[in-house]
Length: 190
Image (tube, rainbow, N blue to C red; front, side, top):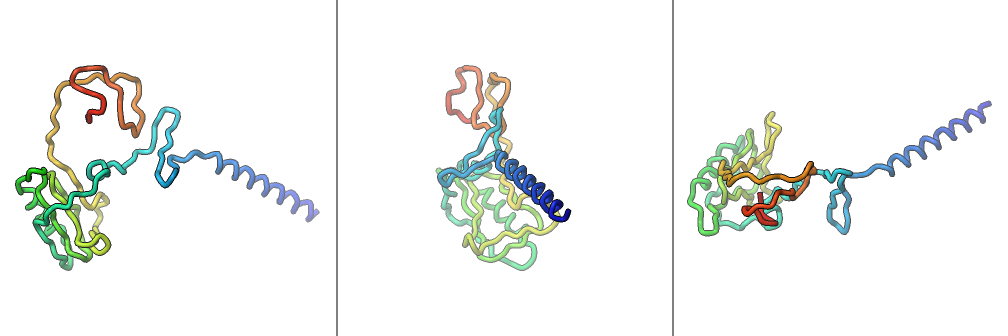
């Protein structure tokens, strides 16, 4: 009787393992790594995981410009938010040069404690550390948002409407179909 129960338990355990193995291998994942690069899979409607790798400077295709340091901020004990924000605001008020840049705020080596987030609201401003391994922004407090917000100005300009043609635009699309008109060409950023 004991051997019979052990046999039934073993068969049941093997069955669960086979079912679990089939289920694990039947899953589809949102992304794959192919030849060292992330490739995003799409579902039957063309939706894919949103790719934030394009959120960096110039769609993360160019390095951050090596601008002249305009302000140097040394590390101090306690909250450094206001000091760094004042430096960012100062550089933000400078005139834009011929390359459309204002300058850089350089943070010293060390850990900079922040009680609130920082805001860069003007174009042409770079915030950088003296060393990418030794300059650290450490945000404390209950605010769960970003450490640095890059807001920009509200300079949206509209030049008329363009008719969208299609029934659906998949999540994560980098293009969308529009009716032919004289204002847009293939490859225009909208």
